Image 1 (cartoon, one colour):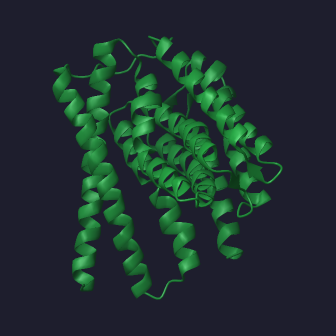
Image 2 (cartoon, one colour; image 1 turned 180 degrees about the vertical axis):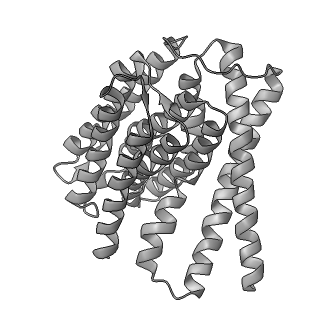
Length: 312
């Protein structure tokens, strides 16, 4: 395959991701208004779980094949990318409204499940019982989220009313384009990097690690462009919680997971990202995460990536 054709496929994958994110955000916003759900809850559930579908499929297949340990690194890296890079970029584009419910429940839950993962894995393994605990918490949190019908005090631009079948088609089509386009982009980016002589370790730390978060990045940028910050925030928190409680919980229930490949620095960066999100949501008089928070997130992300690259 020629380099020109590889670049063409790379651009095609990027186009699919961008348009898929547009469709997903439009469809999800329409469903939120029609069902009387807040855009945050739709982002937390439908969008958050949908953009994490690639990680779920890979982790569950690996677990059934008895080789799911790699899913831990994938989830840890993905959650750090989600919070520090994606929310950082989104906050730079659009101040993200933070509701009382976000500060009281959703952001602290993100910190709680992060700390719980570290605590359960402190002995070096996530056991079957650990997996059962994570899955039970996932069911409880999803129930509470859907029970929350309306957002408490955020006014966002009304979405255009669409028929339910068209909104569902936009959501499913957008998710399919995100997943397929993201895979196409990552695969061809790796080929181009290999042809340029870039090492496998560097590719793993940069392209592959970031590639799993590409759907979340595209969705949040599209949401920011449409001034739907609550949907973007819900997407990130939902994806983080989904990754830990459902993906790791389900994988550990299938087969115990070893934390041998995860360093204390990785776990520390994961915890710092959750603490930074809590601080950004709760500190300050204005009920939003603005550009200062975005810059702080990006600086923390740059520091972590610098550490990884230096210690390849």
